[in-house]
Length: 285
Ligand code: DGL
Image (cartoon, rainbow, N blue to C red):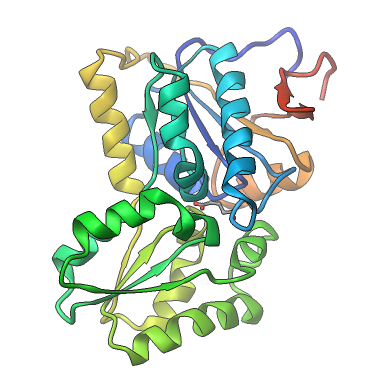
């Protein structure tokens, strides 16, 4: 729990997503960088981002970044492919002294590893629309056939904790069966929510198809940036504090955190007021 008397630790790594998806990235950051304090923000008041206009998602990403910077974050990780597609470029222009790490679909490793020459990408409609995706395809997918699917409803199923239900499996089958028929041997997870259903995905595609989750590579990029700018936190005997914030339903978020194996000791709700997020509310939550 947090009160108005507490504030975030200085120099945290700040991570955000529309919902719980970015926790797949946060978990890799915790593993690789165990001394780093973190703040995670799930914008669950606005989830899903993937079917919204890019302009609107950009507005959310700017406001969340402002919120993080007001709370002294040392780096912002856009742990959301949709927000990266919509806003990463603009964020870097607007906040030129802030360090950002974003997501892009892992087409490069997929194109390097595929033997059949056919690769499937699962991502949201907004991610496929963004210029970032077009540029990744242009740079890395030469000579490879790339099939795409937006998996309608999958993000909402995952947000609702339906990680193993028949309905969730049906959505995955609908996306992947046609791709399997076209000969894919690699699936790229282009949405940070999807690693939470890797067991189902692997069940549908079988062991012969490789599923690429970019989260470990993103955590490595965070570590490289910290080293490059000499920003690593010194190691202490006690573990660093991790804060988890949501603009949505706090009890449901806390339950999900615990179910996914996070220590949900410091959780709080944040509030949208017009185009900005209010800081920690002045009440005991
Ligand atoms: N987890 C997000 C992504 O990586 C957002 C999904 C959504 O909100 O639609 O794209």
